[in-house]
Image 1 (cartoon, helix red, strand yellow):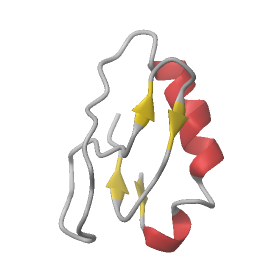
Image 2: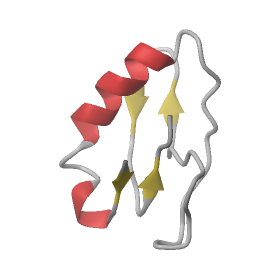
Image 3: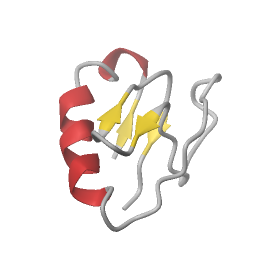
Image 4: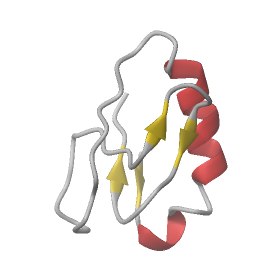
Length: 65
């Protein structure tokens, strides 16, 4: 699914819950997304904290599992 700008904080809890399930067994690519609407089919997560499963979302974030 794809989360864009205004939806980022709204869906933050959903993403955190998802990443808590995944962070034990999967490598998560961490990148700073500075420009919106340019990314697709790439895992973009801004400031993922693996120890607590926190994800801070900015701009456009596409997560394909």
